[in-house]
Length: 273
Image (tube, rainbow, N blue to C red; front, side, top):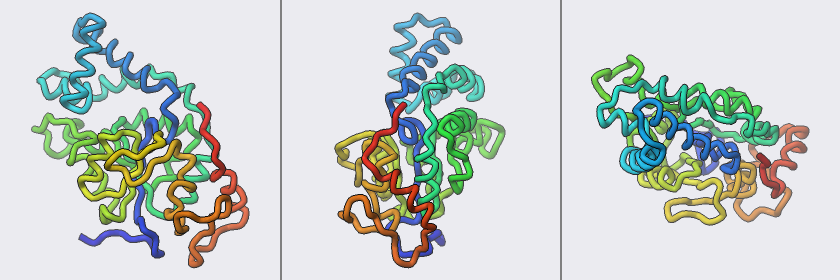
């Protein structure tokens, strides 16, 4: 297989970037709201009591990676669109604040960028819209529909399994879309399980939303906004460069006005929900 390579001698050829609790901070309340919506879906769809629904959600996540994957694996007749429209359609998206610095940061990354999320496309689009990030910032997208075409009338319609991170199949889908050598692909995610799966397949890994690296993470960063400070190698800058003056590789021309704007991105400030 011919891998796509960066035009200059950087350590990475592509970044696989998660969406939820990675491009926006985990403290928005989206995660807890999603869990409540899943519980309510189980209660409304299957007549479960609240405590039973919550326990089932936890167990299906543990054993199958998601509630939807577990329901389908157990033989329940539920279509992904029905499930996602309920559990994602009622999320408080207004809690995701616009982040102009994030858009600027993504645009400055010289390598290929793939948005890699377990979420369905409709949720992805709403979250990006709230963040103020154009999908065009990314070279491609891997989402629920990308990983599961067989559930929407695509190839392999006889399959009923659901492919999601952290499964090997999901990571392989991301790598196929990236078209890059795993050892030169940087995978950013907030989930330690997902990071471990990526590391097992040879990816370089960055755990987002944490101060301390997990065993399988090569890097840890508190927010995506600290990416340039935490991993300056993405821009061809040696680790340990002087704070505040990260210089790009001498082979790469940077627009001066863009550079001035980027100076604000590398300041140690947190994204506010």
